[in-house]
Image (cartoon, rainbow, N blue to C red; front, side, top):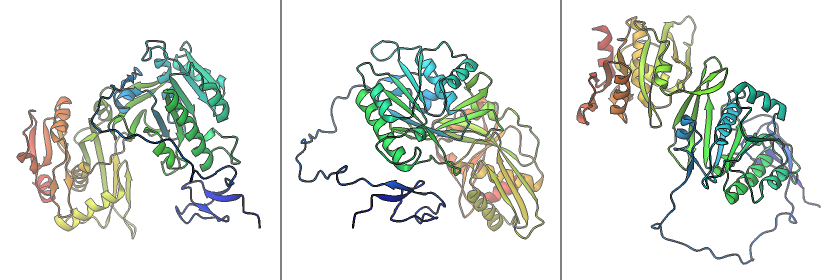
Length: 461
């Protein structure tokens, strides 16, 4: 019997099955399994038994040439990438449809094309789109005021044609592929966007970028869960993974690094979406607090850290009487499981009954907070809404809350206080462990909290 030449692969997680099924047992997704061709022995021969080139080993200690970083003249983008773009690096940019990925990269290559490369020659930038036509890109360039930039445009989807064009003696310095899900390798019998096509196209493009030394930007789509579509191996192959976040109801966007081989992870860059495109925000804390109104219960200012940057945001909570059998817990910009934990600690350790009340939590401005340092700010906002007593308008709050109700210290507290003092805040509600650390040089009045009972007493006194 002839061996089957096709297999069924899940387009979400890459699991392989011998026959089609409606649900993937590996990731639990429905209608994601598609039929793909299997590599035959003639096309995938084993390397066992063949001699190869001997690998040479060296010591860790040695002389390494200083890494050259190409400046994009967009400070926020350079910050997220670790101080600039490293030659030969591959950067994967993901985000929701219409969030501004193509706009950001078009603005970046337009600025880069006006500069010079490592050799002092004009930087050659290439923008290859598989989603838009040349006319559509030109219309966007006119709207952004970039029509005079020296960016080379092309509309192509065949990876073989792209490799042939770029693999020359005069290869470009910057290449943008928009998007990787539209690219296809003609040797594979699969539709563009499938796991095998994305994996193969990404591998071929990244290998050429490493060999020729140009900087490669890959635009990636995201799923409804907010993760990059396609195989996870694509994120492992690239050097940097950036997520472009934001809410369409707000005018700012967050560029967040979740992986970076040439810089810090969790670094963020803040942009504001305007009619002329994306503009950098030098002071994001002032932007997030621009519409804040003081003397309102349920509102609290949290001093957080995003990467190496301190950011002040407003935490809003609303506690209302529940009329159903199961109280609602609605959260925007934070982890709902973390909120449930804070509410359970307040009820078990402080005697505040919240099991019969609906609780709504919102991080104003659309920013997503992940660090545990926001626990105390969330608890303060909830208690403030419950007691109808507002927080002082000139106070910032931060600290981690444990299950026993204790308030624990968080990293970089001094940096948080300096950012708060710069924006005019005069008080801080923070962990009491700070007294054992290095004292801050700011003039902020510090209110130390050892446990959540002290927080409750702060409102009922």
